[in-house]
Amino acid sequence: MRLSALFRLCSLWLLVVLAGCASQPENPDPWEGFNRKVFAFNEVADKYVAKPVAEGYQAVLPNFLEQGIDNMLGNLREPLNIVADLGQLKFKAAVVDGGRFVINSTVGIAGFFEVASHIGLEKRTEDFGQTLGYWGVGPGPYLVLPILGPSTVRDAGSSVIDAQVDAISQVDHVRTRNQMRFLDLVNTRANLLKTESLLSGDRYTFMRDAYLQRREYLISDGAVVEDSFGEEEFEEWDEF
Image (cartoon, helix red, strand yellow):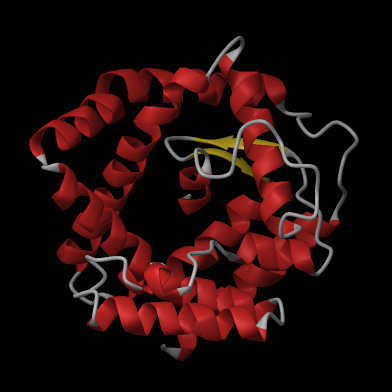
């Protein structure tokens, strides 16, 4: 990694820490008016662009190929898991995630086949937002990002760092890297299609509460009362 890139990462890390340390408001959504406007924009963009593309993606690809691509994209995220593990002093988890990456990248043919889980190396999700949470940085206000959706001040800032650490960011060819990012977004939206039946009532409130509870669950490694939204269904929100 170039020194300039490393300097940018360190600067971003400092900004995220300062923002996250500012406060953890009693009201997690003090910017609700602004957030609802962004949410409304996202809903329109999703209805006319993201969802149709995701549905077309699922319709065109055979199930085994769609699952294989999902596995490959998940495997490319393992380097981020490893770095975030180390940042949280989870050395055993870092070894497990490193083992997953090596096994799935080789035996699993570039991650197309999820081999590691079958030998006891379970898939996990870690990121720099969780790392900051581990060190006591509060989430700050809830924030809805254009296109990307639910987040918090802490997670939005740290996601910039996440994007510099995962394997896709290491692809030098700009066009290829952008195509892989686009494929990742489409795949993520396709995975969320099956969860839409769970949405009820006010969609904004439902998705906000689901996101915040899911993040709390991940940061505490499950040491909270498990919410009714489930772990698997909302896992894809954490790629953002």
